[in-house]
Image 1: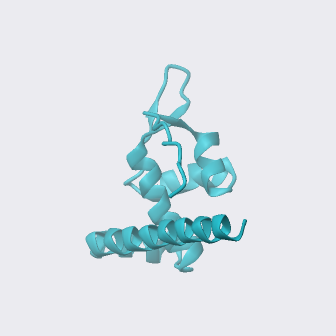
Image 2: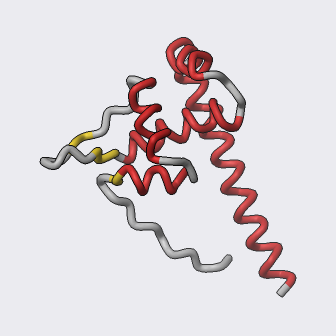
Length: 113
C-alpha cells in the first residue's frame, strides 16, 4: 500500500479556506452561516470568522444535501432538524465510500504504472 502523508489538522479555518474546500464563493459560506444555526464560527479581534473542524463537517453535510442531493435550503434545514442523526450517518457512509473509491483508484493506477 502506498505511503500517504497524514494531513495536519488545524484548529481554525479562515472563510477563504473553507470556501476553497468546497470550491464556492465566500459569500455562499456567509449565507449558509446565516441560514443554518449549526454553523457557529468564532471571531477574532478583527471580526474575521474562524471555523472549527466541526463547522467544516457541518458545511460538508449542508453541501451534500443542497448541492449533491439537490434539496432546497428549507428542505436541508428540515432534514437536519427532523432526522439529523440519520442524515449524518448517511453522509458518513457516503464519505467513507468516496475514500475507499479514491484508495482503490490509487491502487489501480499504481498497478498500471
